[in-house]
Image (cartoon, rainbow, N blue to C red; front, side):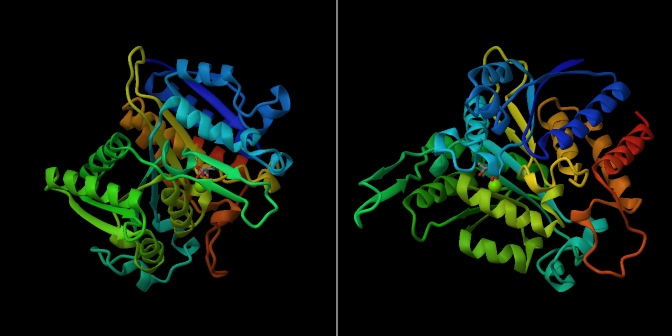
Length: 381
Ligand code: IPM
Ligand code: MG
């Protein structure tokens, strides 16, 4: 089969890690008989530099023509002083809204090979985890195109007088909540059958609405164990007993914050891939889908052959699974990443915290990616 993929490398380490994800896709394509055609597009700081805006219309239009989108990262100090609507981050929000990718899947699991890179103690990791092993495996389903990141915002006053103010609005419609809950329930069904709504229903009206709708949906999903947790408590529970969670579903802002917290528990934010999925609309072969590592553009290490390419490579695997239903191909990439970690290779961000760790070899972006490709090559099609 032929697939067209919009490629948005972006800024900082974006280009170097996405190029490794492209290598993985091409190799998987050769192996399993698929052709991936890449359409490279500009968005973020690089687009500001070349055309004066973070998300050129031509980029969004071209992205909508493709079957899926792979993104690196956007942003950097160079563009930080620009006004809000001209900042590179607008490109991300604009692509998410433009593609309608409302459900953001952020899996966070502790791989046994990275046990030493996780800052938690064994007893914390074994707490509330049925198998009694130092492990956790959770999925954050973050609502991605609504809430306070997209709500009405503004300022009143001159900015200097004491009564000057600024505001952002958290507003969710029933339809927005229902559709992301549906994705989360489907995910829970395919996983361990547990779903936890994270909100701040003791204070926020919008959270109470989320809870109301989740309760209705829970009644129709008797096979799933639905629970409810306040976000402040959740942020504590993640570092107290992460093994208790299976699927966490939450709003845009809470999901943004909690997923960074969860990423550290996996050893490094450099390991976390994400999938953002939308609906299948008229005229498209596949639902819209956008895949990106959750780490940022890390401008301080860009171009130094230090960045961990695994989150980008794993994002490519998520694309194969979620956009194209190529499960075998996605698994092959994941198995190759796993084998590479088994062999002891580590980028600096996932190096062991204990100096006694044996058999670890610190490598750069290129060597890590080359090892993944070699492992992928050796996996039978
Ligand atoms: C993320 C990022 C973005 C977000 C920023 C860069 C706009 O933090 O993907 O989590 O908040 O969604
Ligand atoms: Mg974030």
